[in-house]
Length: 219
Image (cartoon, rainbow, N blue to C red; front, side):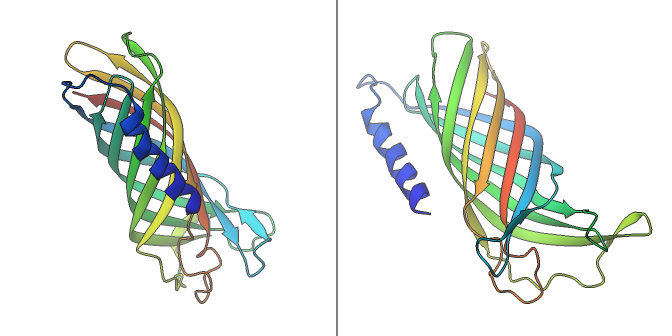
């Protein structure tokens, strides 16, 4: 959490340091993004040094963004997505394989740096915090060759929101009237998904890890 606060403060300071003409107006880019998220859960047990990872889960991502362009080279970009984090446990040592879906409204606020801003093809670096607002969960078990809702749901007290940290790279292709976007990002969970000692929640206090690939269009 402290690292996220430091990074947010640094991003705000950069908005004052980036050179721009005194009379220049702030410009906005609006757009949509769609892609896939490949996530897994990093579990922590009663021993904080005993950790385990689930197998990866691939789910779609859909959302929108607005880029506040403070200069040709720098922008603050809030985004909002519907996102599913989760993981699957199908190891040989597990008697009944299971998987957990956790649905969120995913809100990153990114500091975006355009490395070359005088070309139609613009490489981009970005980083910043994200807020995951909890919507719902689904816990399933694998029985008789198919996934079914578990007869014993997780009794987890999920936190209403979780802070993550995002960093990534991208490319913007600038056309006359719109913008084509590709981005590749890593999303690292900072907070636990649920109360650490929630009753009967073997996966409940996990942190998330995700890789996301997205395509977008802006105006």
